[in-house]
Length: 64
Image (cartoon, rainbow, N blue to C red; front, side, top):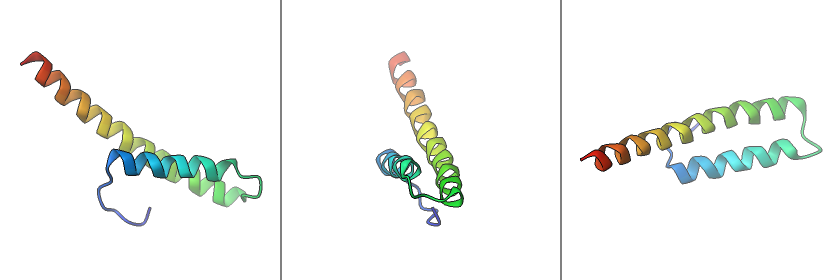
């Protein structure tokens, strides 16, 4: 995740799924697993923020 460009929900979710798959590998080292986990948490936060923003917009439109 060295690239700090703004990810779309789909990109973040895809990367999050890749991190989860990587963690499940039997030959992964503890260091690699911890790095993947930390990156996964950041990706989860990105996805959650995007969904929260979308929910806010939907609520505004629904109330209008």
